[in-house]
Image 1 (cartoon, rainbow, N blue to C red):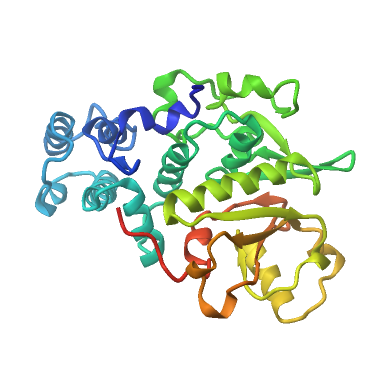
Image 2 (image 1 turned 90 degrees about the vertical axis):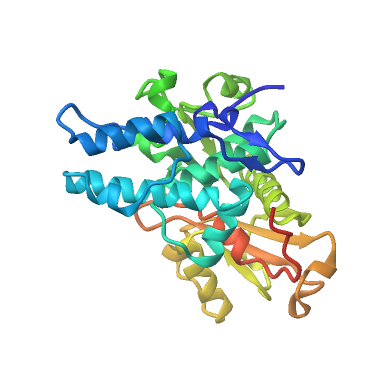
Length: 334
């Protein structure tokens, strides 16, 4: 089996009988090794002592008084956020259960932590997948894309890669794995797709998301796996090529702009040329088992709308697939 996305840390986690990810001390130590938490040479003794104690026992209880004793205000805030996140993960049987709790309750956690959870859970959901197009499309779940119209094709490239951002790595494992900060951007095609597995943590491959081509179909497959893994609901998702193919009875915006455009269509408004041009993908979702659907939508398809912002950024929100579908019976919490 081909491995991919080593930077998410999936190899540091255990799995329960149902395939859910179990929190481990090794996984927590990666967070403790982040530069925000590693005490600098001039850190106070309280911070250095706390960090050393947690590296020895990442699940060790930490009191509010211990954190309040840290001299540096920024360090205190970092530790408060990290311990709250650690404790939230530890309260749930699996990382999947913790993620479901976060997105359903609206629990506020740093966006970087939410993206990292999506990254590793999606890696688990896609375990065994050897279709590089599906894996590249799945990167939309946790990495912002910049859209470009090139020779009639709509191309998605990783925003952080092409903007040359060189701040803190999205994954705490990136620097440990020796992944370079920059890499050449190429558009995925049949002739270069196999190389994805060798460089999957570079995020340097662009994807063609033009309607009617393989990119959107691959994204549909990734969404299908995500829903099955987290909700235990089997669905079929197919990309549509034109807005007129949709007759909305229920829809889910896959990002903020997609939700806004979906609202306009729901209310029967016509889209102007600029707004319609922001639509990247429209999908029709059908349920294999109609009994899992609420009465109002039973037998009807659900439409999924994906759109870019006016500055051509695509910020996919995978949590909308969890909170927005009209399912009647949710999965048993792991």
